[in-house]
Image 1 (tube, one colour):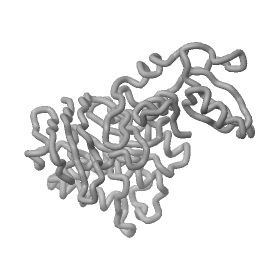
Image 2 (cartoon, one colour):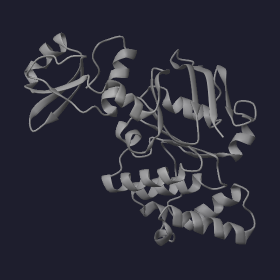
Image 3 (cartoon, helix red, strand yellow):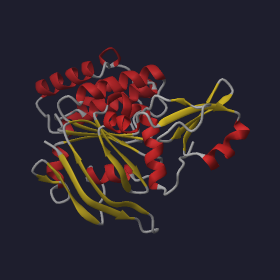
Length: 297
């Protein structure tokens, strides 16, 4: 099964064009949708999740028309929005059992087995009796994935799931998503490039409602290999380098400013070749989409 999105557009009543002819083909596995805040990621995810209507375009999940047959999509969908609420005085087990009933798992024995399996899978079994109001941020996100897994969905959408998580919880959550993505389509919508680099086999970069790049992360990195250069400079020197070079990004390290520059040849003997990563790709694509020769830092 794959998700095909064709020429989807959306303009809000205030005149903001959130989606501008978005077309993507998303196969089974982990797919990263990355872009800055306000780029249109959430609008696209809400559209796919049948929570809002686009102005135009088409989308199909396998044989299902996403825009015309919303009930069929919802039977195949698991969704973890950026903001979701829980009943703080209910236990994880109780609320998950209730949500399973709403999903149509009405036979008590079957529901018990499903809930237990999902609690184990999301590493929440030992905390199943704990009230959700006492969960940490990472535990709440894992509960969000637990409810999204109810009903054996074929498409799972997670919107900015690791924002605010500590490194340990972030790693645990990404590992869980990666495991889930072995058998279904998982769309990870985020502004955190490292999340996409760690777990996604395909990706798209979006800005101002337009797709700037789509493909395999590693292929995009290889495309700029040998053309990225780095140098440590004083912060006060940055404007001069931005005028004279295609500065991709800047990073602070040990009180110094490290610049990455895109050039087919070594800019001068003071630069050393940099090992490119997905952040370099991201900033280059944003820069190209902005019509300039430099990217935000």
